[in-house]
Picture (cartoon, one colour):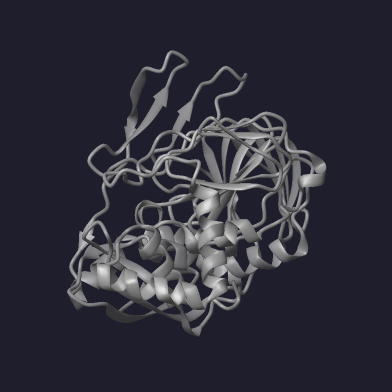
Length: 421
């Protein structure tokens, strides 16, 4: 793999996917004869995918449910044999690469994937996953991202929630996040970014584990873009802040974020919960299509009923100076909540801060904020800075014809912050 360039990988994908012209194919086959490392890579990729059905050209990311029931062995705490995952991610056939890829590695074996048994350490690639762990957990990657489902969990996924590093933890799981002690008695989804956004990678955890120092450093660094957050699926979670602050109880259906440690929030994002044959309903899914905008709760008989709580569609602001000003003013109450929550616990917070961000068109035809960061100043606490950045990053705009760079100053004191472009 070390000898293969990005161009080599692209050629392998196009060749194995039948996407080359006759002339390109002939030229590449001559190159294969001269380069044994290319031949070995192609053979390895085909060996992993040959026993699985090809993804139809009409396949989209909204795929069949992915079901995992696992009993993660203690010795599988750190996934071994990563090379098959990396090889599969780089060398999978063109159809898999184009339409979204799931790579599954058994941590303790055996795991059944699409009716095929996968033994410990083996990886397979599939586009339509039904995963059942018979005696251990499965480690699943979607392209370069990953999520892990741990003991006694059955999870229904649609879209890309949990794509980057969220974990589902069941059972009694004491954790530590930065200076906070988190005691989970039930089921919770944990991420290094808010549940409504994309997820950064983190290590997988199991009940009884404590986040290692590498993850703790990542969590603290992630505070600049939203920080650590959790959503309780069932049971209760107790969060004990530092400095003898009162313990916060997070009930099922509510979320907690390290950037606002003194309060919990009722989650209105459209998660889908699924009652299964196991005692507790477990499962999450990313937001539904914008036109649906509802929480859907599925009963044990499978009938879906929309919740009475509708999720408001995002307000689309103009990308003019006035439009950006209006957008920021619309979230000032949330920004003030960030500041007020932290300033009650730590005196002396405040000052001037300047953000920079890019407004760029997303796949859905809406302008979203990317690459947000602090270019000047600060409020005296990284987590507070991150809370404000998190609120700002949720704004939506008209899709610009080209990325628009913005710098935005703000001043905080013990009254709602002043802001101006």
